[in-house]
Image 1 (cartoon, rainbow, N blue to C red):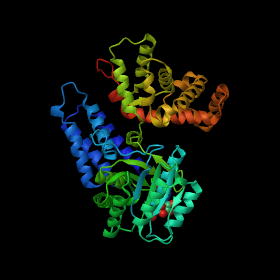
Image 2 (cartoon, rainbow, N blue to C red):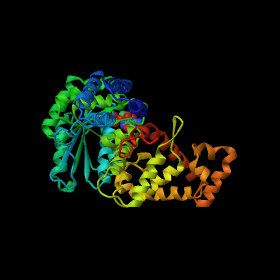
Image 3 (spheres, rainbow, N blue to C red):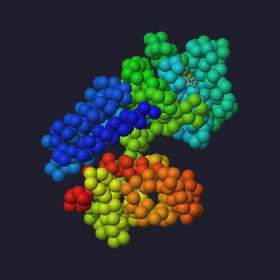
Length: 476
Ligand code: GDP
């Protein structure tokens, strides 16, 4: 996905800023220009980029920052917050959050899908209904697309496959009438007694013609949906903004679903759609199959986009823990000291994160007490990005990794590039020995080395500038 490239460029921009010896107006400006360039290259609309730039600039006005403020951290937070706001404009704005259907709600919630033909609207309706079915809802589907021949059969067949009740008509050509009948049926019919979520698919066209927009307005007026979802193809690019705005002017769009995120689209167009509708992205489509729909959370997406899990938060927490006024149990204090030292081993100009440092990090994460919460700040790839739900799995993974590291030699644990040291053909015996010694398959030893390498790469971008002693002197 090209969005990953956007992530890399943004990480690069933040890393360059972090390396500057003095953070002055020029550094802020350079960082802002780097961020803007990255967004423009990802196809985000120029005006949106300008607005993002202005917000970041006002959030990090160096003259108005209190003396002693960590400027690097202030800039980084402003960039990440602004990206998050781009994806979920209601967050922190005081606006009511996007409508979320409730299980067992009576009368059933109505969610109406709008979008251009080919955007993936019909497919997404079924995915959305099925997603809710799997989480305990009793959804139903209504086909109010009387424009596209084949839409009715497509929805009917997919609904049948997913075991979701369906309403549509081969004879009625008025979409408003079909929609009203469908909603009435699932709200009032004895047979549909348990239904708590009605998903209405509507017509599309190849462009936002006045007739389509008028039809959407009439449908919304007649069915009074709790939520109107705009479906956008990720590959739409710059046209997304005007398209989304046109829909927003006809119906009260409350959320956006971006489809085809599995393809080569840059995805920036979708971000512009969010800016136009001031509505959050709630799901993304990642394939043609019914299960290829992912609930979307702007916070974790931005973290993933930046390729760093909650790493900045993690670093902040380490700093906070170091300056915590309450006394820390001595072993944890020591662990942290050691970790900070190990995290920031600098050899010449290059930064080294050894396997032994990773081991210390894991030990720290496993400890109970005030540092326990650090686990949620670790990079997503390393520990999964589903927070508490995956914590047990994460802990098991950490244990596995530690067992394998227990079977390594000091040279392997302290080596600057363990991947290189252990993965060459001549060194194959090292991997086999670790696998045998720890009772794990060779593939898991390789996985550990890969994870370590990835994390070392990420940390090298952030650690030197951010990991500090309480008295703010960088560790040399
Ligand atoms: P509609 O005209 O907006 O109702 O679009 P359809 O639902 O018929 O989808 C158009 C095409 O896009 C179909 O071939 C779908 O299988 C495909 N499609 C929909 N969503 C996705 C997605 O998230 N990823 C991929 N790769 N294809 C998708």
